[in-house]
Image (cartoon, rainbow, N blue to C red; front, side):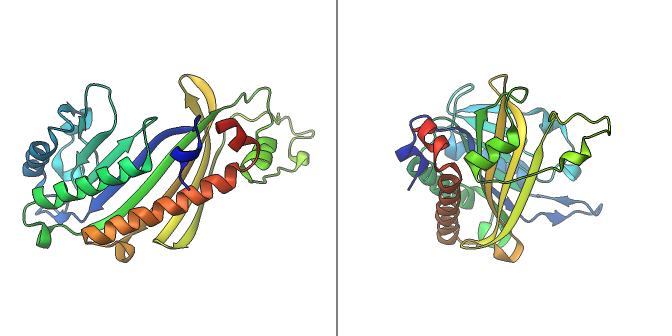
Length: 258
């Protein structure tokens, strides 16, 4: 079951696939990617037909010694168009938004891995992945002044939270919710790692919204290091996030998104 095959009004804000690889100790005790400067050009040479529009981000001014895992360059299909690829020292990401469909996204992951292995100098010896992440950000408009968020979470997203009313009685504290940022993490067997949920108050197109994120991350010894294994990891992570998403929205939200 996949989001794009079922939902005409899917709440997706962004889908992100992220790879991090190990940095190396520099002479100053900092961790750097010694091949990063060369890698930028080599990556662009291999993706420019698909992602020709280059953006240098403000973070590109950060010194190499403290820029580890900070995205500095972005390659798009066109100005302000998606999907896109981002790169920084020790990190590369694939991002898509409303146009996302899994089969296309999976193929782009496959191509991204081909490019990375081919472009990274002596990749067999120098490229060791330290983290894999598949992250989905969804949002739904929500009026925090008129609606009861805790009731909404319970009835629509299978999340029960209760705050004792005595905390507000005669304490001078108003029970009107100003903000929320809830995070949950659970160990995962397939793929090996952890699944994370996050719910927070935010904006979508300048309108108050409830944002929720569903993520699968593997780090350290749980991270595969061959292309075939990474593709398998991505497929398993997608199946897991997809399963959780539909179980959470089953009912009124699912009907709203269809």
